[in-house]
Length: 403
Image (cartoon, rainbow, N blue to C red; front, side, top):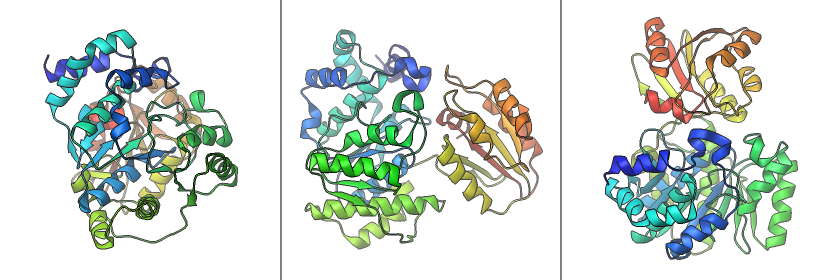
């Protein structure tokens, strides 16, 4: 079996939420526990940081990884989804794992997959744990896929748990209120394990406070508002950096040695240290193109707040999204002065352009629709004039076709 065959097997033979959505979701831990048991429970030998939240999980994960790498630790990093390459999900010291490791894992464990019928995410989680153990990582940063309590990653006993924030997203799985969603995310809080919360909201904080009391876990709310020099664009990243620093301080309290000067250096090299892409990421100068993975109400609100700070003449927006997003609310955030190029991506989850057009008309947006992202981008480039700005946002799937 070659690498491409292994990846095709993972994507095409297995239930994959990124591709088909709700039908692939397997709540509960029994299945992943059975798979990990067949692999001799590699997660039992890992020291980890566990990260949940509606927005900012990926950024906080990469910031933490950069800090720990600069401080000399061997760092595993498990995030999702990927943009260009499946191996973006599993990195060690910022480098993608080898194609051979993916292939070998699939070949060696195919019989387990056939017997246990795990989902795509259950397998990739088990793959990450196995590879981090094999490479003897000093610490591994594990991002939840969806929610927390029933997420496949929620089998670990971390050094510290982190919850970035709570917003309305994935309501078909996690609930329709902030309290319900917070309850699901709070599921990563483990007995006698410190937890750091990145955002105060009286509704959600009460949930975290109660869960921490039940589990006898030290609860820390991110309180600092320091401004750091960093290679990441966007003021929203300052909040993510502050949360990462608070998490580092919690690790230090547990005896981990982390140097403040190396930490400052790490913040200037997050992209270089971790291969972090897709968050307010400028991929072209002329034409000026910025891509961003924002896809829910809070994320897109932050995205346009950042874009508003930039200087440009005309704004060209390429947008595609999944059908489970609250597009009616999202489009209320779209600037009326911009030009919109709506498109779709290759997934059963993609919202069709006719539905996008309908909501755009309701919001008086100037728009065109395109059969695929390349057509949308080419037209935006044709309409681009000096000092304009092209932005691409709405889905990791869309970014895959553009970056």
